[in-house]
Image 1: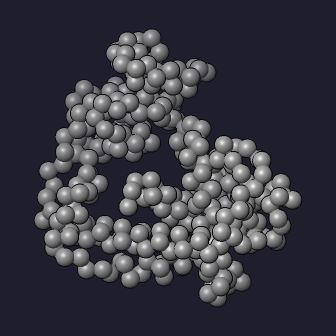
Image 2: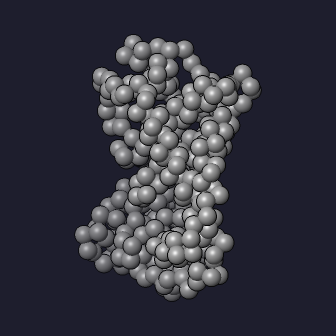
Image 3: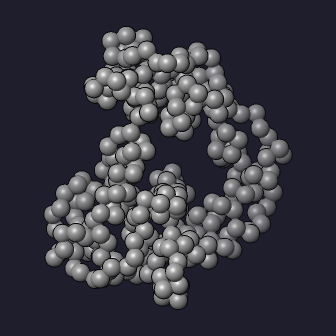
Length: 300
């Protein structure tokens, strides 16, 4: 499964379906069917049931607060797709007799359907050869990113132009300017300097904060990150060197089996969602990913 699709599925399972959205109040009760073209408060209709625009706007606000930057067009589209997937799953659950009259939260209803769809995949028994190949193909994910040597430029939120300076610095670094020059002209002194040696990925948060620590291991050596927001300001991080983990298949066999089964379940859920979408009539406000409010798309 490609990385974009896995990101989408994780967003569905961890954001739309999970407790984050439930806590934020985004998982609403079913609402009266109103054509999206006549209802400015709807972002879409799914089989005639309206999806409130506020649900989408709150999801976007959550993502922007977590990432410390405005969402991209692709991220807006993924958030909308996940909200539509959630609605399809709730409707399927109701058709199976799992209804909101059972006093279940929408998150619980969706989770019940997902668990039913993915259940058999969680007990699949791959061969030893399949497991070893899976480990080698996904070594970084399974064994961890090893040790990383990074360079970071800090932009203090105490200065009102911190975000603008961070984006300017990222652009200059990507154009080939030396990091020390960019840091001297645009950056601020951090509370804690990043050591110039390779560090275990688990220690990165001590120097660049928890958000950056989750992003940096996904960079390729030489990559310059987008500005990453934190409680004290923004950081632009350059991955200078990566030392791969020395973990072996034998030492991680149990984790490899668990991840193999989890991904098999993810694939099954993705196929199920695709099938639901093909059989549904979905109307979406056109160009919503760009923030526009013009016209309707009808999908069936």
